[in-house]
Image (cartoon, rainbow, N blue to C red; front, side, top):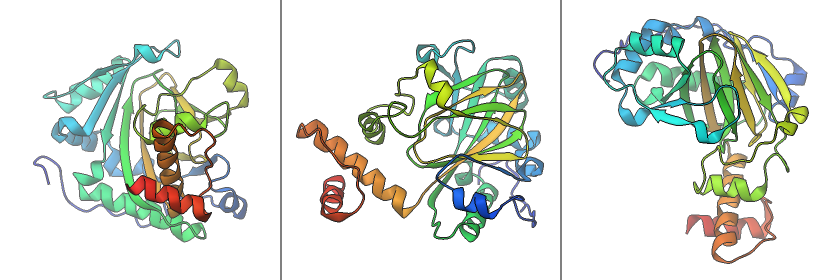
Length: 287
């Protein structure tokens, strides 16, 4: 454990999520799903705890970005760093600037975040029949008023938990033209970042739009493109990600399809995750 981070255990014994229904259980993974939670009261996300985390994080374990706030211009994104700055100064810079900070996998630095992450997904696994999450990860986002997270998609399953402030989230269908198979293959192969998707303003008329407030979380279908716009206030949230056996199978298929498309010139490639073609592609991905 790094110096400067308190290690006393934190206990909040009540359930994290409070408004499950039979319909929400049935909808999980197929449509965007908003639920209420109590983690906006959790001391792990209080300013003092975040200050300690900022001051002890290694350079490889965070990202700092700025970007245009009035247009959707990927070229305007710039990287920065917070090395050596007091945590309070970092939070003040967020308050007065146009930046977002992503603290990567805090569960590897502080076991309290690991325990919370495992507890979150244990609760989901208990509630959702057949849900078997693993390879769990977390990232804490601290962001300025009005900043954006541009149109992108993620390979693992995703959830976003709002702690402080509010933001608007646009969730787009996980099909063409919003995301195409070749683009997903390139992201899976890490030939492109998750922001390597073309965005058109006309896509917005097909988006499900949510205003997320403290004490709310949002889950959306796998690989669904999304973008985020902060309200005129500082935001603190955290994202969690996971794999399941079915997500892992699709990962292998997309990975193998990308290899076959580039090395063999194949173009008609199925995304099926069963049958003989799947096992052949699993071998390609493993090789």
